Length: 269
Ligand SMILES: Cc1cc2nc3c(=O)[nH]c(=O)nc-3n(C[C@H](O)[C@H](O)[C@H](O)COP(=O)(O)O)c2cc1C
Image (cartoon, rainbow, N blue to C red; front, top):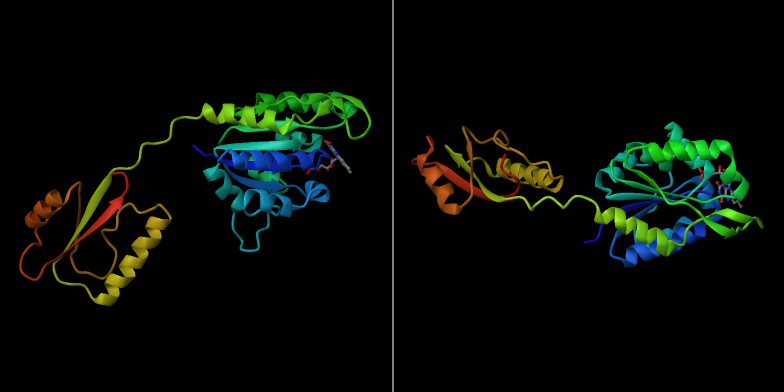
């Protein structure tokens, strides 16, 4: 089953490989949303990720619509991948800094995080980088995929190479495979509204629109007090027969009463 993956791209020369990773993740059926640091954007265009994922690329914490996207994105994420992860971003994660879209989003994460460092061999060997790496590894839910050794873009040979996108994909799928089984689908129930008199058409329309909004936002729980109807009673039932039986037993049942039945697909409390 396709997962929701956030791909955080930071300013390593290996950022171009993240484009291949985005493509492989999308081809594997995952919904991929890319987030980029300013340094990453110096190396690869956000348009590359936009076209490979078909989704908006997040680069700016200060959304023009004033929305807290860094929270909304993490609400839905099954996995966050930081690839490539620079020494700078490792340090930010280790110390809890949040001064841009990527680092702030990482502070709000509740899914597993796969960190794939890539840097020059001497940077990788630096004690402070290794200390930060140990701190990142110790964070709950964080997994580090060690860089490979080989010929680096800076001309040095040694450890620091971003693992191949196919290997990052395998590590990501292993983490996704370990996630808990999805929640069972919610039980369908009927919501029954009994009015002691018909509400105005305008009030009904407003109520319908409001219910639709709540339903879209996934937050419809109880609507007993909505609208301008008088003395409405709200019941919940699992079948139409049960709903009608409840309606008959309602204290408002009688001449002039109005009954509406709404089918919702939500958990019964
Ligand atoms: C051409 C170029 C390549 C770079 N490659 C790397 C790299 O592979 N790894 C790394 O840690 N830093 C690298 N840097 C340095 C980072 O871009 C720099 O530390 C930056 O502040 C990282 O910011 P970010 O973590 O917000 O993306 C590179 C810089 C340049 C100019």
